[in-house]
Amino acid sequence: MFSFSNLQIEMMIIQKVQIAEADTLLAFSKKTFYDFFAHLNEPEHMDTYSAIAFTTQSILEQLTNPNSEFYFAVDEGNIIGYIKLNFNNAQTEFQYSPALEVERIYVLADQHGKHIGKAMLDFAIGIGSNRCLDYVWLGVWEHNHKAIGFYEHNGFEIFGSHEFLLGNDRQTDLLMRKAIV
Image 1 (cartoon, rainbow, N blue to C red):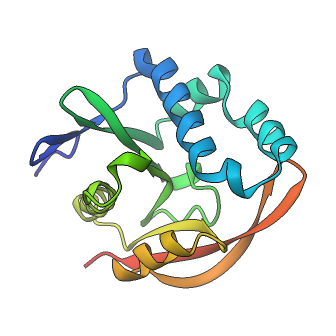
Image 2 (image 1 turned 90 degrees about the vertical axis):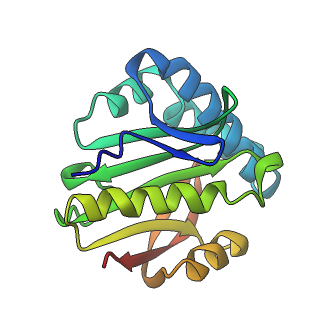
């Protein structure tokens, strides 16, 4: 059985985030979230969401959940991306045991085009395959056309939608999945 706890892809390494790295994960999560969505949303909605989602307590609860896993993408000692995977009852919806949810996947803007997101997505699919799961699923904001195209290009199909509350702004996320073969 192949272990997916650490994976090296060219110069980049994908490694499991440790509890001692909670503050680093918190800062990186908040930075990438704001980098990608602040210019598309009202500041008060971003700040209201952030006050709940990006706290030390929230990150520690997620890191200690046995059904959630975070991984950093690291290149030459620098964190360039991260991914959060949910299994079983940690999944935000469905909680379908033979599936895995990619709840978050972010790559620094200056690292786009280097196939880091694809490597992390393939890494997640590899974990799903290793655990004999049926499919990988995720939610993506309906206005994030670049991400939707990326997921479609990588074999994901839309199978539904759900509401995502960003502060007081009700948004729609498209739900996408890919069968694990």
